[in-house]
Amino acid sequence: MRSARWCRLRAALADERGDVPGWVLVTLMTAGLVVALWTVAGTTLTQVFLDAIAKVTGAI
Image 1 (cartoon, rainbow, N blue to C red):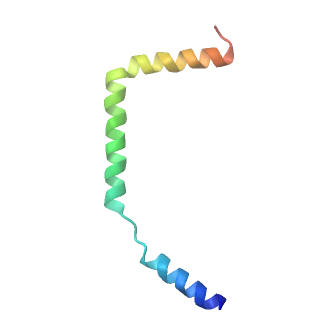
Image 2: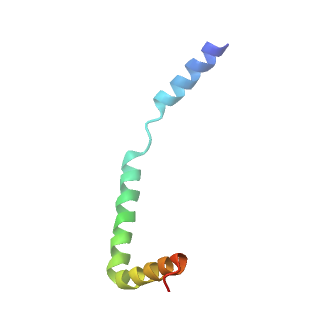
Image 3: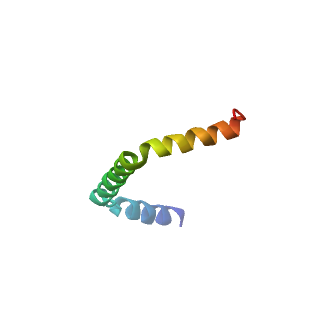
């Protein structure tokens, strides 16, 4: 019984190739959004981050 289940699992995993082009597109689009956001609001985002760290560490 266990070997039959194992064979079915291996067959199912062997058929799974994934959607590589889709994931590549998602990754590239995410990187593009990050670059665009950083270009537009980089200075403000940096200051927000530094302020948050200062509040957490008590450096105010």
